[in-house]
Structure formats: C-alpha cells, structure tokens
Length: 61
View 1 (cartoon, one colour):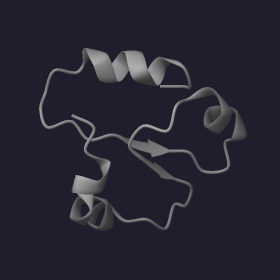
View 2: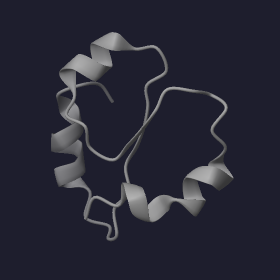
View 3: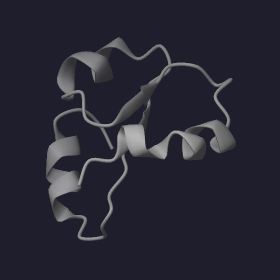
View 4: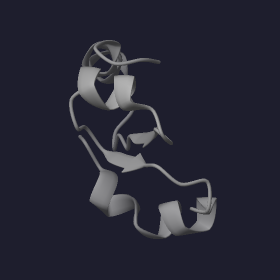
C-alpha cells in the first residue's frame, strides 16, 4: 500500500476498532505522499509486542 492510497484503504476497512501501522523505514517517497495516519515506524527494531502494547495510540476509528 503506497502513499495516497492509504486514506482510501482506511475508508474501505469496516472492522472496528481500526489500527493503522505504517512501516516506512527510510522511504522518503512514502512520507511525502501519504497523510500521517496511525503509527509510522522507521526502524526494524520495533517489535510486534511493543506495537500491540501501544495500540491505542494508533487507533484510527
């Protein structure tokens, strides 16, 4: 999923609550083309456990 398609995709997902995590390590094109929805990670050091522990921060709907 890239850039401008992110808001459209978020709008299509009907599951609630909805959490969005964007894996954007070193990707300047993605950062300039997509709105800042959810949690943006730019490091592979982030663990799934850490993401899930802070999931309320990334809740979109």
